[in-house]
Structures are given as structure tokens and as C-alpha cells.
Image (cartoon, rainbow, N blue to C red; front, side, top):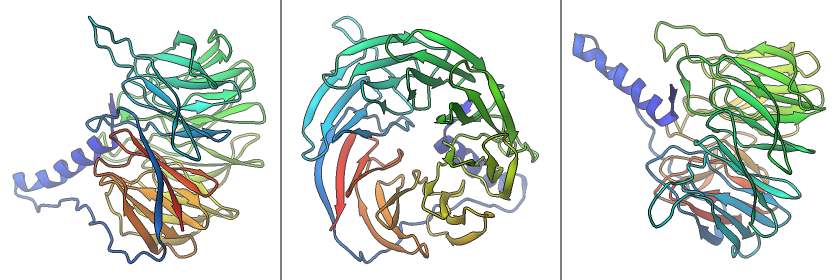
Length: 390
């Protein structure tokens, strides 16, 4: 069973509030109001486009860029190529199985990936797809080992798929043929979402739902090492959750990772040994600068962490439980969105909020995309926007 971040937050609030039913003191998690901000610079919307989103479903679908085009997908099965400069539609394809007599949406999830030849998407129906990047024609459609909640990862002649039931698969990128698979242990209860692998030095590095970070050879799926960074603890099933759902950050011979109810850590990429480790939990991927990691923790605090040693340099607690997106670095600012559809800019040196704008009342869940001086955002309702800082 996988719990979405929204469902988990609700369960925690209900469990804490429920103490009053038995004569105890009532404790309720409060969602911080959106901070009041006097924008230090104007934010300009350059263009907008749209896909068929679903505001009732928790989905991390977000756009990606390649060669002056933005590629985006909707949960229903729509995949779109958008001109980066103008926002115009280059091609649009519907991969759902809907017809006059049947309506079956694609249930796309996790995100879109792209390389020099193909656009890749995958679904909760345990199907992966490759689409010709230039014209939107379907190249192949193949079943995989389970529902896919992470982005497919293209690398050389393969595409790597991480499924929610714990399989890592290597497919031929031109045909979709299954080349190898390996299984990771999956607990009975976990957060909804999975780690997107990152490929470095011929290895796929990814987290699992049992608190580990793993390395596998891309050529054949054979394991290289496994390291635990999050340990189950606490007296409730929720407190024992220890998923590593983020995308690891690889720099040189170091992998930076973080786990829910666990730790942030730097690992030696060659053997998985811990270089340093600090207590800090999250499901979010990092934004990374030359010497800092910018982290949204599991309570939606925003922190700056030193790459060397893991010291916390600053912490902004203005966004508690606002269900933030992964952060990104845009110019010299930290940018992220929230469940009410606000987009925020923070000063990367001290964490102060310097600007905000409301993108869409449907909310923001997926990570913003930075392409040059453009910031691309996909809202829950499927609308896609490009912004720039003037």
C-alpha cells in the first residue's frame, strides 16, 4: 500500500487531533499561511499552454526540455511537444485507449524523459512508451513489471524503469525489449512515489522503500552496493516509514541522498560507504549549487545544507505543511511551488522570500523546470506556464 503525501499529511493531522477523543490534549498540525511578500522584482509570464490535467489525483507529472522544446504529459494519456520560445504546440498525441465504445485513460505518472531520439513516458497500468521526439509518432509500447511512479531514465542504448513493486528494469531503447530486471525489497506500507534512478559511471543509483540507496550496473542490472540511510523507528506504522524517494545527486565520486524519517547523507560512489550523515528527513530531491544543497524537509521547512559535512547554514520555517514541490535553482534564487498554486523565490544566501506569484489555484505538485532564463511550471489542472524574472 502506498500513501500519497497529501493522504499522509491528512492521516497525521487526524491521528494527532484524535487524542482529544480519549481525554488527552488536542494537537493539530497547522498549515502555515502563504507568506506576505513585497516582490523585489517583477515576474513576467511569457506564454501558457495546456494538457488535460486532473486536480483530484496526486501526480508528479512534470515537463522536461530538449533542444528548444518542452515535453509534457497528462494523466489521461496526452503527450505534447511545446516550442520553448513561443509556447506553441509542435505536436500532440493521445496514447489513451479511448474509443467510441470505451474510455480508458493512460494513467500516466512519474514524469516525462527525453533523449536525442525519443520521448519516454510510463503509466500506473504498467506500460512504458517511446515516442519519436521529432513528430510525436508512437515507436513502441511495452508492458513492464509494475506501475511506474518514477521517470523513465534513458542512457546510451537503454531506458531504465523503476516500478512501484520494487523492480528495476533495463529495456532496449529502440524496441522496448526487456533486457534485464532485478528486484528490490518492498515493505507492506510506503509513501506513494519512487526514486528516479540517476546514471553515473555505468551505474544506476536509486533509493528504495526500505531506507536504502542502491547501485546497479546499467549493462546487466547486477548489484554493486547497497547502503541504509534511513532506519524504521517509532511506535506507529507512519513513524516507521523510511522511503528514499528522491533522485540522488551525483557529483564526482559522491552521491548525496536523503530518506523519509531518516537522514541526509553523502555516500562514496565507489562503495556506498557513508562520508557524512545528519538527521534530516524528506522525500524531495535537492537543488544543488557549487557548495550547498537546498532541501525541502518532510514538514516543508526549507534548508540550506553544506555539501562538506552537512552543516545547516539557514532554515526557513514559513512554509510548514504547505506541501511544497521539489526546489530548483533559478539564477541565484531557490524556487518552488505549493498546494495553493503559489510559486516562491528565496534568496539563496539567507533563505528570505523575495518574490511570489500565484500560478494556478489548482495547485502545484511537480518540480519546476529551469531552461536558461525561463522557468516552466505545470499545474495540477494540466496548464503549463513559462515565466521569467525581469
